[in-house]
Image (cartoon, rainbow, N blue to C red; front, side, top):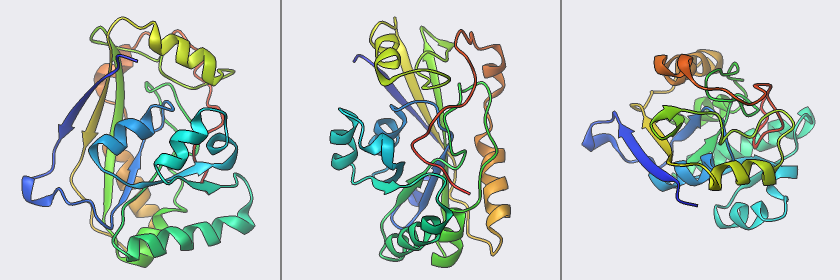
Length: 215
């Protein structure tokens, strides 16, 4: 698709092992998984409907996506326990704690449910920020928001002039007993960079259905 990936890694070189870490990020586009996996291989938690979408299902299978039923609290606890088990075995798991996609210039509050897995496993949290730019300017064109379809988003992406996704990787955060404290600390780090306030947002900035939905 001609999308360029850049990485801004704030971690010291001796602390770049992501095994057993809970990776959390803001959620903008279906490209997020590919960008993040290029930086830190992990299992991803995805909404079942999205994981089964035509075309995306192949990507989901390749990345070992964990399928999650959005809004069913009876199934949320078993999924958190499953993530805890994966972390305990030394594998990284990535989630989007906003629970939905946003345009990138704004963000949603991080929901704490999957941070409980980090608490229970004693796992560090690795925050990442995803930023999209077209020809050097912040853009929302890669966003999967409002009434967008996979097709309409894909068309904007392939017709972009110079689309770049930057993955900013912050230092590992040590686990604390309070999952809300973990979630709030991660959100403060990941909050949109100041220059995004000048984004050219030409799309409806309402959130839409997501790869992850957490309580």
